[in-house]
Image 1 (tube, rainbow, N blue to C red):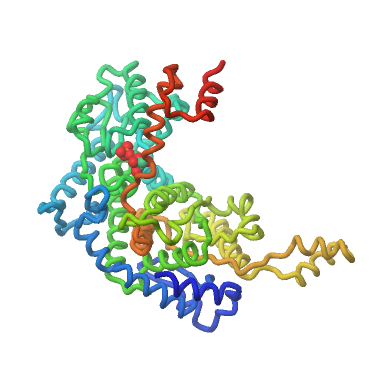
Image 2: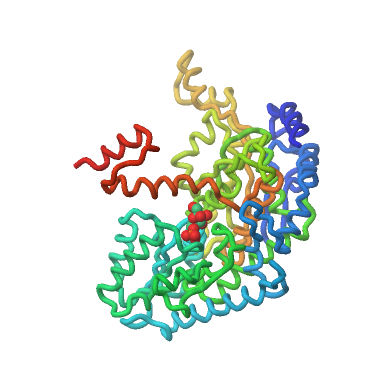
Length: 530
Ligand code: F6P
C-alpha cells in the first residue's frame, strides 16, 4: 500500500522544499474551513505525492469506516464496542447501538450534568460549609487529561468554583491539592470510566478520609462519573450525584460527556455547549468535505507522509498559545494510546511504523529549550505550529504580534535554513579569520529543508477549542484506518498494571513470586532499605 509513496520519497527526499513554490502553492497546499486555516506548503509534498496519499484513503476504505463509526457500528473489534464519542456532542438525531437509539440517553445525561452544574454554581447544591468554592476532579488518563487541558485552555471563560485536578497515585499530588482547601466547601468528583483504576480509587479514598475529618457526611460531597454505577454505589456515592455513560465512549475521547462535568461547572452551560458545538461542527466537516478540503484527512495524510513514508519517528506539536500548555500532553494520550500499536486489526504485524511519538511545549518557551535540536540536530522532527489570529488580551496585542512573528519565524527558519556562505560572512563579521573562520562558520549553518505545518485559528474560544480537539480525534481515526489499526483499544497498558498489582505486596514486605527477574528484585531491596 505504501510502495508507491516510498518510491516517490526516495526520488524527492533531497529536493529543496523551497523549489516547490510557484505562484499558487501557498494557497493550494492549504485547507480552510470554519475559521481554521491549515498550511502544509512547507512540506516536501507535491501534487503527485498528494494524489498517492489520497489513494491511501480509498484503498483503506476510509469513507466506509467513517460511516461505520458515526452510525454506531462496533468498529472497536477487540472489545466488541461501538465508538460514539461523536454522539456526545450531537444535539439531535438518532444513533443506534444494539437496536437502541442512544441519543435520548445522551441528551438526558447532558441535561442532568448542566442542571447539576447550575445548581452547584448557584449554591442550591452545597457542602456542609455553604456554596462550593472548590472542585477536586480525581481521575487519570482520559478521565483527567482532556478536562485538565481544557480547563487551562479556557481560563478567560471560567466562572464557577475553582477546579483542581488530581491524577498521580503519588501521594504528593493529592496532598498538595487538598492542602489549600476547605473540606466543608469542596466537592470531590471521582472520574473513572471503569471505577477500577487503582490510582483514582486510592486518591478517592484519601480524599474521603480527608473530607471525613471535618464533614459529617463526607460521601455526600462526592460525585462520580462512570460506566460502573454498581461500583460508585459501593463507594457510597448517592445516585443523584452519579453521572453514568456507556462503554462506547473511549476514555481518551470522553470529555464531551459526564467526564466533562468539571468543565461544565467551571465554564458554565453556555460555554460547555459551545465547546460541544465546535466539535459537532468538525464532525460535520469531517463527514462532508472532500478529502483535499478535509482538515482531519489532510492532517493525517501529512502525518503519514512524515512518519510512515519518510520515517521520522517523532512529531512536535508547538502551540503558540500559553493556555494550550497541556495540549501536547493531551495529544500524547489521544495519539499514542490510539495508534501506538504493532498489530493490525487483522491480527498481523504492521508492515509500516505505527503512529509517531508526539511531544511538544508551547512557543515561545520551547524555543529556549529544545528548538536547538529541531534546527540543527541530526534527527528531522516535523513540526506542527498552532497560532491564534487574536489573543484574549486586547491591551497586549503587541505581545500577541510578537508571538505570531516568532511562530512564523520558526517555520521559516526550518525551511530556509542558512547556508555556509552566509555563515562565513557572519563569522567574518565577528572578526574570525582563516581556519578558525571556517570552523566557526560551520557551527552557524542551518541545513534547513525541515518540514512543518501551521494551523491558524481565530481565537481560543470554547467553540474553537471544540473544533481543534475533534480535529485531532478524527486525524487519529484517519491514520488508524490507513494503518489498519484499531485506534480504540489500549491493551498496551495492561501488563504494567498487572505487574504493579503483583509488586505492590512485595514492596510492602511479602515474599516475591518466582516470576520476578533479578534486576527488579535488587531494585525492590534498594527501595525498601532504610
Ligand atoms: O491508561 C489506561 C486507561 O484505561 C486509559 O485508557 C483511561 O483513560 C485511563 O486508564 C483511566 O481509566 P478510567 O477512566 O477507567 O479510570
